[in-house]
Length: 173
Image (tube, rainbow, N blue to C red; front, side, top):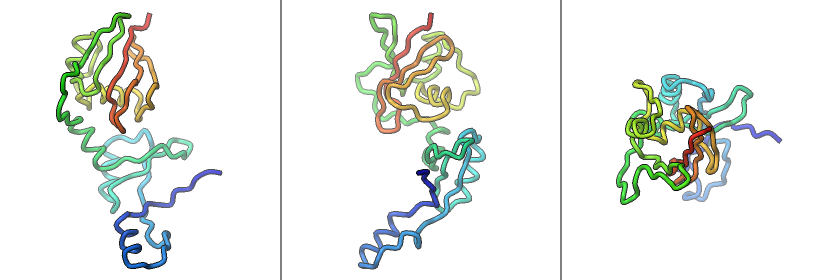
């Protein structure tokens, strides 16, 4: 049975209902949400979110299937890059015995491109390896998902919530 999303309900509205002991009629609190295509450009998404009271948009593919949600915070992260609070002792790039590389998602993409000979566009709209991966596949990957680009096989080996933490790379023969 297909799911039909009619909008979103703000938690603050529900808390008010529960705090006052009122009966819950969720349809009364549904707020409309703009819908954007999964291939929409950033400016169209920003316009849709800006004109919305819920500061988010539903993402659908060409068949109308729900793909996810994009928020104003997601847009800010794409524009500014992921803020790396602390890298700790983990190196950004480790060459393994089998010749593959374990790469941290926070690694600066220009450094990544220089070290591995991967062409990075000068007008790239990302700052990190995680941004490179997101740009390559145009969506948030699942852990264990892989793809091939520029002669390299990429496998997302670790996610930290929605953040790409580690990528395993190997040269494609």
